[in-house]
Image (cartoon, rainbow, N blue to C red; front, side, top):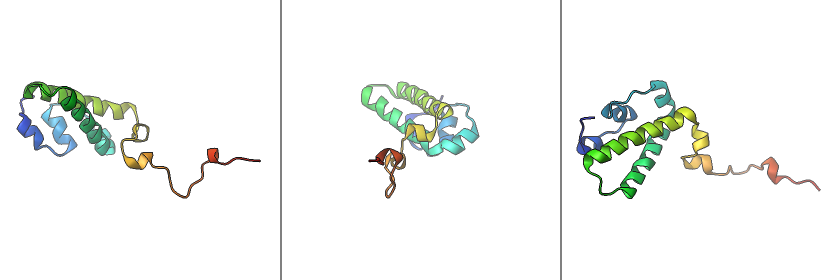
Length: 105
């Protein structure tokens, strides 16, 4: 990795992050889980920033690289539904009665 933190801050697309960190990836996995990978990556970056505020820029980028790899790996081994990163996966559907809510007398 030869990029700077300023270059990193300009990245937008998932592919740009993988290219920035010189990481190989399966385009099919990224296409299916793009938003989830980026969301998980964002959560990991936030943890790094909160837990290690004194890291140098190089150390921070190294940690971010590991975080992206970890986020990518999550969705190779798991599904978006299992991770429940977005509100839609956590909201109870309206106007639906589940079988566990039905009781018999």
